[in-house]
Image (cartoon, rainbow, N blue to C red; front, side, top):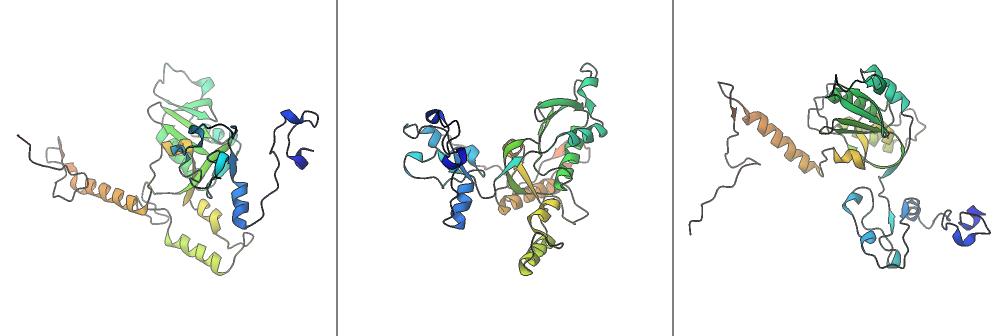
Length: 298
């Protein structure tokens, strides 16, 4: 009955049942099918004239399409997820906990706050499981495991440095989006220097070969999207992890960032006495140079 009519609930109590639980999949075009599968519905009455729920919010960035919404009463209430957006399906958290115990994580049952007050708390899916004395190393280790797909790519890693907390989420229902990885250190395996994209010409060549030879997912030589994930080129970030991540909006932003870093390394340093840091020389080309002008005495 529910699948046939779309009304969820008993047939006798049709007035109180939820409508629209099952719908006929839109098959007009391929684009309309994709759109229908990614549709979200805000449970607010269409008759109200409230503007706030219909307006675009800054947290929709990268996750919800800002343009695709119907006209009329449903405007802004019926939205669509962006094409690259992904909703996590969940993965078990026990393997992650066991891994961190092997990496010197102190379990909550054995923790003494008086002896180690500065240790970082470790949370898994909102549950405090233990503490660790070297959170930076632990975060780096778990991040490497995720980039190599040893643990699920859905796992979210959030480090709150000020609160001394490290949160790990592997539950279902988190909205995520893929981003290109920037190498934080020189990578000897791929010869990618620090501050550059982990994506190399070799990865592009493999993708082009997939298209050229019409390879399918079942083929042994198929690279595709999964190959990019397994190579650590792309990783999925959810909304909470994005807040603690530095994201470049364009390749030009990344180039500007590299130039700033290079300028600080070249010009910044220490003087002969090693007491004071030498300020970068201002020759008019510095991106952070101050603008000097005459003082108005009138």
